[in-house]
Figure 1 (cartoon, helix red, strand yellow):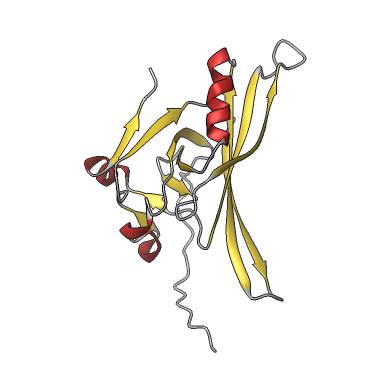
Figure 2 (figure 1 turned 60 degrees about the vertical axis):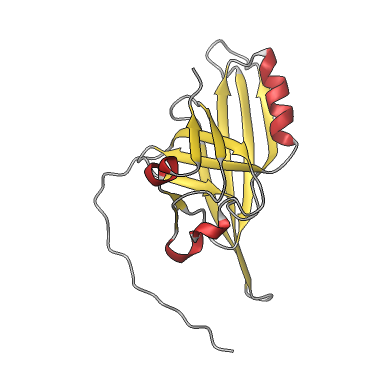
Length: 178
């Protein structure tokens, strides 16, 4: 069977983009929370299908990143996208132990805000999971005293954008930590 492709190309954009992650929002993922909204039709999600509380995990600037990798097999005729958030948090406290254990228990709804104020939904159809991380005291005075957590999603398409304004007017609540 022939594959029908629609290719439109892409021009060179202005040089006004910034790298890095500004904020991360995490909540409990449930099956179908993003699906019925039509995330795959135009690469953007407008709202969740049910009430969704997201909580911010504030990271120091210039430390966290989101990487999306194309995984394609010519031999098997498959392609999927791995979405990995590396989240760095400074100065661990006792409550972080319980928080990390809870994050590791199940699938998560993860939204990443980059420094261009784009919002990406990781694992929009299958959820994201805490797949690794480390806590370090550092060696020298200037080293990281904190933890790095790796969240991974695997999807048939890259992480879709989220229209935060429309989502907040609908079913998504972005809770800010004081």
